[in-house]
Image 1 (tube, rainbow, N blue to C red):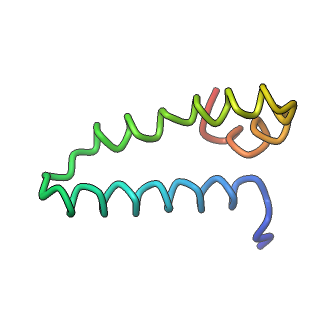
Image 2: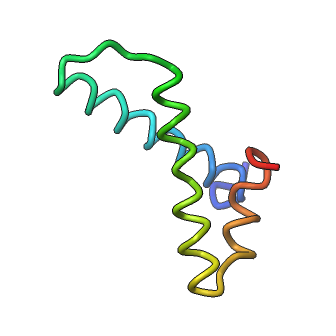
Image 3: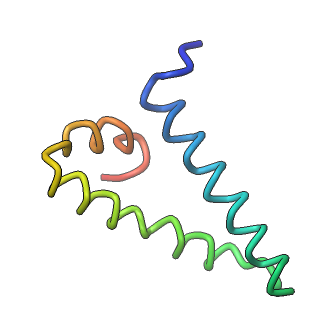
Length: 69
């Protein structure tokens, strides 16, 4: 298995986002709701904007191609 393939990078990124989500909710003593996690993941659009502005859109699309259409 390649550890630097786009799908592995994407999965690792989603795992980190998930851990961050759980951490923040635990600190704020909130119930974990999957819809809130989805909202957080949708913030990927910010990463896309940054990629477009820095002329690295190809790398962004390669990284997230399995999860976004």
